[in-house]
Image (cartoon, one colour):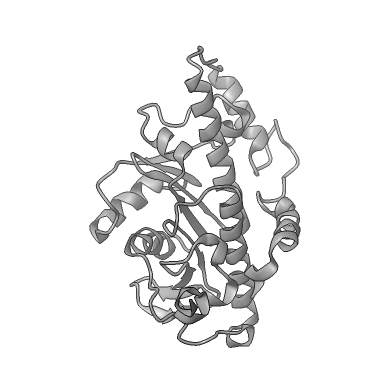
Length: 269
């Protein structure tokens, strides 16, 4: 029975004091992000990934051990790797980095120092929209939040580093990207922002799939209304939204952590 416990898979038991204060804070936030993705149903067994840039001058990032469910991930047991895929910190006997996670996430973290977090999912609604030629339609206010949605054509399982350049070119400066016939990807300056982007992108996909499944005629909004709505929801001041908002994800993050703490605070360990 012992072999099925997480403790049996650990080579050693990492503790908070093994990390700098800033790295520990990032680890707690990323572990919380994984738990939230699980609670909102955005998981695919042990697959997919959320990564965060580790504090410091080195190009290191934190990511999940390949073998854990999102509900099992804690701050101290996240892997730390460099952009070449070399493990900097791994307390596990058996669990390593998922190569597809390394190829996607390392490319973005290396090329975009402004990005602090990358999230990739395979949800049913996300995959459904990824399989539609029309992609994400601006038929809901939530979808209109994204002024630009990037698209990357499917080339197979993302394990070839030669695909990284094309993925980066397609992503551009977008916060959300639909990987055709594959899934969803969001980025953010912070973990909170990247999670908020994924939450909104997922809900946009779900609403679209539900609307299309009714067989009813979709309402096409004028481009001027779509643009005005996007301006209103933008973080940048504009005539439609003169007061600059807090960055997305910040306002609700404390509420999300209170929710997690009320359910299972073990992500903080």
